[in-house]
Image (cartoon, rainbow, N blue to C red; front, side, top):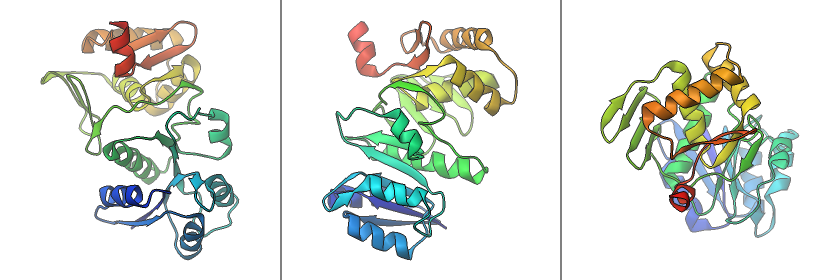
Length: 253
């Protein structure tokens, strides 16, 4: 049984997130104040916590710090931070607080749900998935929709990473293992520039093969051609690669 704690100042939003997260073998708790969060953390053990830092009676960062220092029964829970719209992302701060992932308001609950199941899936395999600390990231995350747990839909693209099925306007495209890993990392971090060195290290780890920056560049080129994604996958020269936000793509067209 996975216990999820949602700490969100907007009680109605907390309840809406809670309903979206309810699945078999998952128990969801919601609260909207610092005090009620502390009470729940003292009573229950949570595998994942979704937290907004700006609470009416306290600072959510303090709760995160206490969790990291073992003040509560929940040991090393995955933490997803809810970031207010327009707030500048401090990647170094996220690393220090051991934040597993984040989502920016306003957001689609399906996107948040996909992030939650990514955490559970990776931890079930015995690894921690840290969307922040795995990359030295530049920019902000995307608000594009992820439908269901593992199906990503962007314009004419449908990417199902669970069954390794990738389609453009309904037509299936075959990708090799490295191309699939690269695509997933780009799409999961839409709007974020992934630095070459960090991306090479992550692909080597996930695919269990050796690649260098030259091979990464060749794989990016092949992926662009196979998906006809030259308007989506962008090279930030001297830095890395990103899957562009729809807003950015429209501006450049």
